[in-house]
Length: 337
Ligand SMILES: [Zn+2]
Image (cartoon, rainbow, N blue to C red):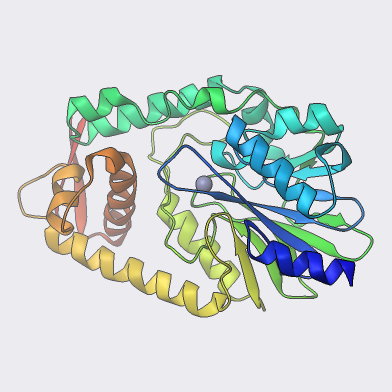
């Protein structure tokens, strides 16, 4: 009785049981993306998937959320991270210190987390360079993308590196680890295949998520631009063929018809690819000019995300042979093939 009353009461607040013994704790972030979802798996070991960023409102909200579920930070035994974006993992270092929980993340992500904040600074340079190369207003480029965000996290030691296909075992369930790059190079999802539940972070959400371009996790930056949209479409294709009932996303509400949402998303990319093709002219134009041409409006603050999106479609068209990239010095323009 006590337990069911607890569950009912908490459903009205920021803490909701979204699947058997999986509690969603919505945590505030200081960014336009809004709250981020952490998931508490009330099983043995007691596990938190994603942590939110490292700031005071997040700590307060997480402590309150855990309390609603009958726990404290010190009770956490395992912390699992979904990807490199700071809104999902920034608090992990602090929580590991307070709880002694093991830290699980994709093996390729471990050096990135250990090298924080240099790894974030490298992403910032990469983003600035991309903006400049593709015709963004210098005022936007110099505003930086992640600058100022470094304080929301701290270098983190991954105690248990994960590989695609690994399993996280619990007393009452098993989560299969799947690498699903696209939104970021490190996107990792955790699937209860028996129950058809995926903890999907930003891989599949009710709202579309942007395939954000960032430096490769390992090896040199390379001459070729990363193909985030290509990776993302392949990852969506792989998830689409799984027998899933629910996806628990990193932001927003539960995705209850994953197959239909993914089919819709892929169709949306096809439509946008056609719109971008139509916006490409005989004379070369910058990716930013093409972005403006192919959309109703471009928000200056999200110029980097719009650029990532547009480059994704342009690269798809280059691969299809209908668009060419014209380099002059450091700058790139695109024209009909
Ligand atoms: Zn993300």
